[in-house]
Length: 148
Image (cartoon, rainbow, N blue to C red; front, side, top):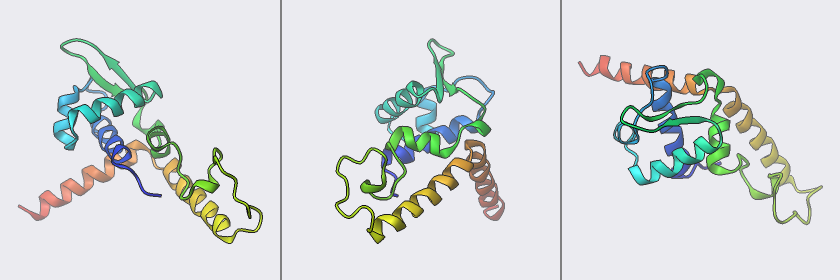
């Protein structure tokens, strides 16, 4: 599975929101600057995540976006499925495959890729946004320790 820029940016933006969880809404410009994501692209991504009930938004001077749930309750799979559509490594193993494989029952590639997809989905499903934010924070702290 390869993430598109959209999926990557969604994870980065959601990590930013997880790190500031409980501090109120964040404005798009703030998220954009912190994560290095173009504002216009970020607007589209955040709207999709809001429609999927992963985010809340509030209008006004003190408005912005915030997580719709505790970061421990949002998995990376939740975010990736919204932005990418699926987690499968090849099209023929997705439940919504447009074309069926002519050798579906005996295709060794399909069989292995189904296992790969399940393993990736398992990892992404058990990894929460809280876990991802903690990893990012720990990495930044280590970088600061060694650059002082």
